[in-house]
Length: 119
Image (cartoon, rainbow, N blue to C red):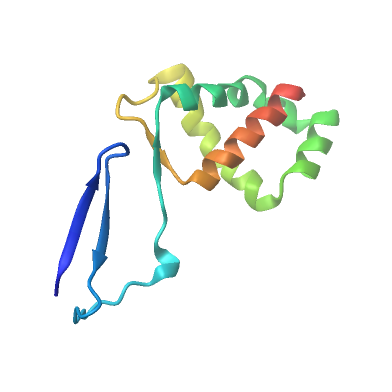
């Protein structure tokens, strides 16, 4: 089995692949492979508005708009990351090595930050 890895220095992760002729006992399920990015403080700071206005989603116009703008799955992801963002903002600070998450999750959190900035 020929297994190669090449460092991708800018993001600190590795790309792994196998040659065509490799005889692998453990096939790779492509549905379970996810690309993760490491976001630094400049990217995470824009999410802090979620912490400042998160409680406005619980009543009045904010609640109606929140339910209309985000699906149940998206609301669960936002509430899951709210605790992490709260700790980064008010308790521990952003980790020096950055924050690792899927690009889709970051895009959702940015959309939520834009939403919370308007209510």
